Length: 189
Image 1 (tube, helix red, strand yellow):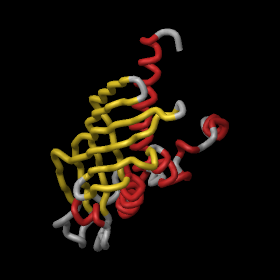
Image 2: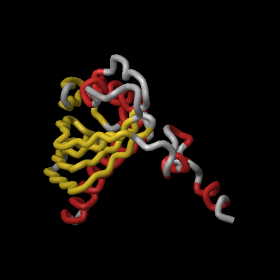
Image 3: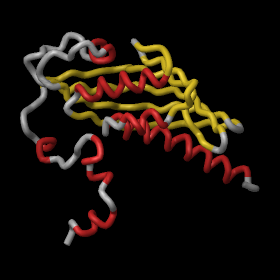
């Protein structure tokens, strides 16, 4: 691309898109998408986990599958590109609906939701930051490293019913985001 300013915008957007796809993969519990965002040698530090990204992806999907639903949002996304390497900082807020019952042996769930009464459904809201590094290899951007951490958290007993009970949001391919455009047009007539 001859214009360096235009290339920077393209690269910034490509790296930022990785971050938004990361949130989609988490909320839709899409293991294939989550794994696709990382280079094979990538590492993650997301306490209490520290190790290969491929193992983190499996843990994260297991953790998110325990939740009845989750919703991650990004803010203050800053991307700094230097050639084929990029650094990203993104603030996040996350909401998790935790079902009644024991959480099992999942490492992330045990740490994130320690102390919750298993006789009650919970809404856990949290905010923190993702600090990530990405590389372009063969023209493709993927993550190489992540440090993720929670800076605040609020826990409340979940209310029964409510708006969420009426929502068409689903995990996986049943979510409306995966419907073909033609199907969506047909549903408005």
